[in-house]
Amino acid sequence: MIQYQAQPPAAPSAPTASCREALTGRMADQMREMAFAGETVSPETLIQRGWTAETVERLSPAAIAQARRQSVRRVER
Image 1 (tube, one colour):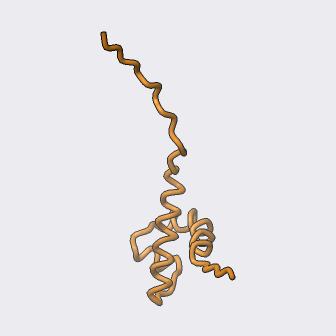
Image 2 (cartoon, rainbow, N blue to C red):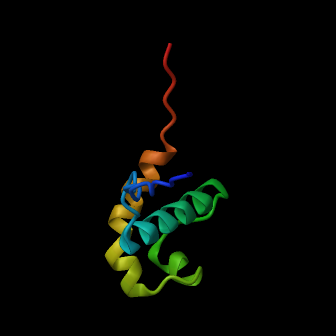
Image 3 (cartoon, one colour):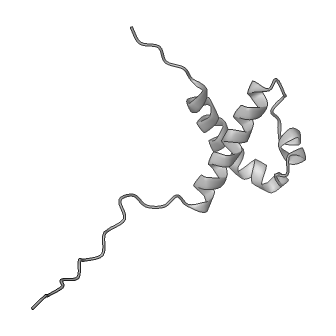
């Protein structure tokens, strides 16, 4: 007789990012793209790209810090 044992449900390995973290990441990516393209990154240019003024005001400090961290190039010898 064949017996099947159900496996316990796997626990998620890492919690999913919150909406705030996802939006901050998207804004940071857009800031980096603009900077590398030679465009000025300011609240006005982010608003022109589709972000609301409230979102820019609320998320830009964290997005700026994240964009700077991701843009640093480390060279080790």
